[in-house]
Amino acid sequence: AQSVAQPEDQVNVAEGNPLTVKCTYSVSGNPYLFWYVQYPNRGLQFLLKYITGDNLVKGSYGFEAEFNKSQTSFHLKKPSALVSDSALYFCAVRDMRSASKIIFGSGTRLSIRP
Amino acid sequence: GAGVSQSPRYKVAKRGQDVALRCDPISGHVSLFWYQQALGQGPEFLTYFQNEAQLDKSGLPSDRFFAERPEGSVSTLKIQRTQQEDSAVYLCASSLDAGANNEQFFGPGTRLTVL
Image 1 (spheres, chains in turn green, cyan):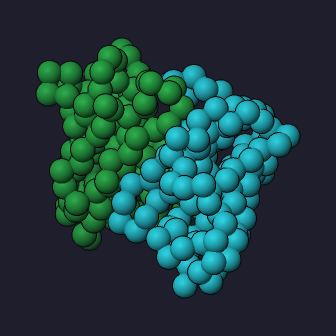
Image 2 (cartoon, rainbow over the protein chains, first blue to last red):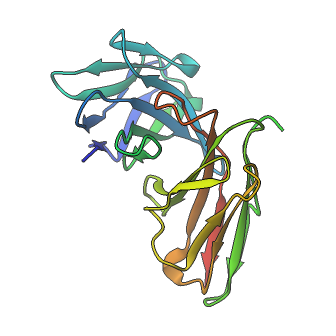
């Protein structure tokens, strides 16, 4: 079965420091992986995706994610955190059995302190 | 509009009432999805449309849940005889087509509270 795991419920980082939000996946076949961000009272916003190609994927708002096949991980990173990055982050994988549904992780709340 | 819109944004229902939630996808998007997001959880898939055809409804939790997209654009998620466990945010998403590498664009959601 396709699944993703986000081992951290919350990540706290000081503004200006690098941040990492962890995600591991379990899929059969090639993974199609996504990161979404959710701000309060707003819908999920797409950040980036990995389909194929370079293991380092660059996305919106200065975020990037590194696909690591041997570790089955797709960690979200940003070199220098902003207070405005504080939000709920979801890792997700496309369910290739149905080519439709996206399976989301449980989410990680990122808190950036000034 | 530029994005996916949903209405109402908030809905309070008494247990046993029927509710209808509306989704307006991005114009021209073929695929439309409904998700349920319980408090503190990630969204969970409910159902998927390609144009007017409902191709996957495996995530609907019971026969009280029904979705339609009769003209291949606007979609309605209907919940009959609402129960307290139906309280959640219901998210709608659309994508250009069903290609696996197409990202889904989400609406702001409808927060349903069943008393």
